[in-house]
Length: 272
Image (cartoon, rainbow, N blue to C red; front, side, top):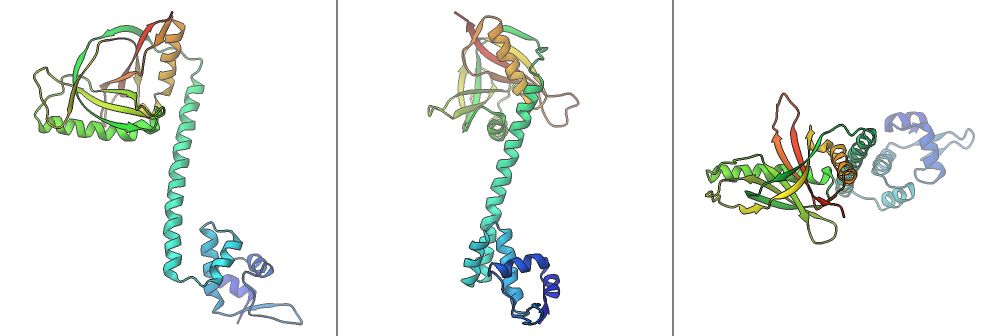
């Protein structure tokens, strides 16, 4: 028999916790000295203790733990619960990480709300023939777009290379509504020559637009301040947005000594 202190040390729990488990009927001592009130535990009770602690750490309430251990679950069932809880925790961590990234992005916007130093120009963007791939995304925020757009461009450039078709200008990303009122379709596009006919890619012509253009320096995950600067400039200078902006990747790639350079081209009309 273990004293309560020895049992706590063997089970790597506190004496206070064992007393609480006794009080709620979750893990009673094997024996209690009627004179001193000292609690004693049998070695076999470590099995129940281990299950109690494991289930508690998996997020079950103590009432749920009591029900489960009283049903005498076996190791395979407990491992199945562990796998399920592990998957749930990973999803929660991913969601929390994405939420923190969104807060950080908005904080960067807030920090730069009074800074309108980037230069914006109105320009005519000529029509361009492109090869492209597209995919749905859940929203216009960077956390939805970046994980989809990067692989799209990798596939696009791979198929162009396999077709021996050259990309004759800066790659372009553009967007359109998905038609469900919430999602978007993102397009990864590469300018190609008039006579080029790549295999396995959609070929289309992006129309000429009048656009308000601004250069964003750095990763697209940090693009929100630049987007809002552009939007503020458009509203302040008598223009109105006519659609989603195009992103023209002027300088990009791993290991570049200078920040990435992306021109945001937002189609505009005169306000009226």
